[in-house]
Image 1 (cartoon, one colour):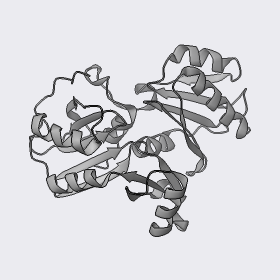
Image 2 (cartoon, helix red, strand yellow):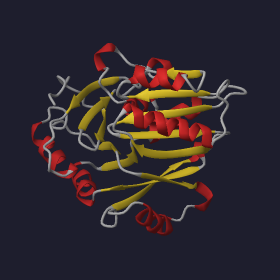
Image 3 (tube, one colour):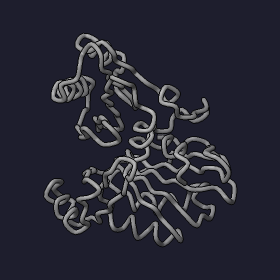
Image 4 (tube, one colour):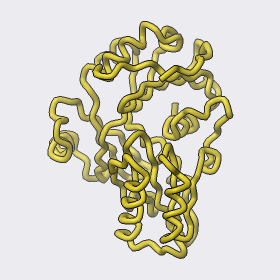
Amino acid sequence: MPSASPVRPTDRGRLIIRVGIDTLSVAVVGESASSLEAYEQLQTKSGLSAAANLREAFLHSEILRQRYATAYVMTDSPTMLVPMDEYDRAEAALLYDHTFSGSEQQLKIGSVMTDLHAVAVFSIDRDLKALTDKHFTESHHLPVCLPLWRHLNQRGYSPGRQRLYGYMHGDRLEVFRFQQNRFKFCNSFTAVQAQDALYFLLYVFRQLAMDANHDDIYVIGDIPRKKWLTDHLHEYVRNVVPADASDLGLNESQRWQQIPLDLLAMINSGHL
C-alpha cells in the first residue's frame, strides 16, 4: 500500500504509532492542541513481524527519523476486559492465556480506564516492546479501541435510549454497548464480509434484549458494503446510523480521511 505524503513534524510534536494486523502507521500531534501535524501510512512486508516492520520503518520513515522522547503505541491485538476492582496483574495474564490461545510468549499489559471502571488487558510482542523502549525514553502502550471506547462513552448518552456500536477495522468487528459509565457488552468477532457483520450485530442486539423500535445501532469504521449492511439492518431495527468521524464528534479534515477512527479518537482525546 502506498504511503501518504508525510508532512515534516514539529520538534515538540507527540508521536503515535498504530500497529495493526497487517498495517503500520504513525501520526504526530501538535504541542498545544489535539491537532494533527503529520501522518504516514508505512510500508509493511508480509511475513515479517510487527517489530521487524517497525525496525525497517525507523530507517526509512521521514516522521520516525525525527527524535521524540515519548511515543504512544496503539496495538491491534485481542483485548480482555476486567472490572477495575477485580484486576490482579498475574491472574489477568493467566486468564488471558487461557482465553486467547497462542499468546503465552507475548507480554500482557493492562490499561486502566477509570472512567469505564475497567482494565483492558491485551498482548504485545516482546520484541516490539523492546524496540520502542530502545528508541524512546517513554513508550505508553494501549489497545487500539481504548481511545474510541472512552470517546463514545463520553458522548453517546441518549436519555431513555440505548446504543449498540459496531466498529470494523480490518477483518475484526468490535461490538460494544455502555450503560452508566460501564461496559454492558463488549466482544470481538471475525467479520470478513458484510453478511458476517449483519449476523453478529443482530445476534448481540437480541441477546441484550434491545428495543428494535426505539434503540440504536451505530455502524462505524471501515465496513465492507456499508450501505448493504445498513439497509439489511433496517429490516429488523428502525434506528440504524452509519456514522462517520464528524457524526461522532471527531475533528477530521479532508486531508486525513484515511486515518482509522480509533487513531482519530486518540488524537482528539486530549490525553497525550
